[in-house]
Image 1 (tube, rainbow, N blue to C red):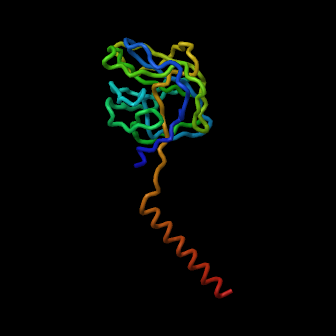
Image 2 (image 1 turned 45 degrees about the horizontal axis):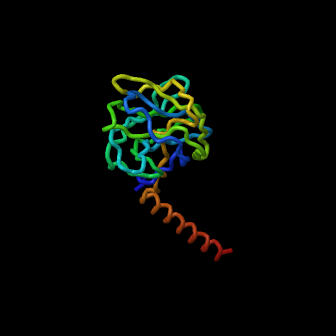
Image 3 (image 1 turned 180 degrees about the vertical axis):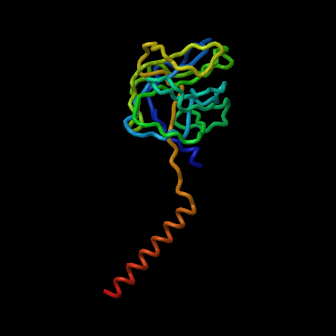
Length: 199
């Protein structure tokens, strides 16, 4: 159930241009700063108007300085990945990113209209999760064949290329932990009553 309730880093925006280059092979994405530790538990890709994705999209987060790939996963084609906030989400093993500068990118296959999933350019009014700051570069990285490469070219399109996204997924309290906490709470209340009666 937790995997169906991601709390996205990119929460919302007003779309500008929905589209992109159907023949472009490589990565598209955006850069950001974290002002708090952020535990990435899901990766996402934009699903324009909810038709289901036409292609798999590998999504990754890179360190902006070293260009090292820190987190990655493949959001599958179709409707198998749950939809929230306009993105299809892939749960991953949690990875905590510390305060710093990063780039998120997604692979675009470049194989034409039959496998092309539109993304957003020229978006306005982006809203991000607390502690996530948008730097505003619209980034691409060409790769043939298409692969998850660091996108190092700024296309000067405002805000970013909003195809990829990432999220925290709240972890539920384990049932055993909840039962234990309840038992301790009852013991504490009982102890308080006993102590009060002897006061």
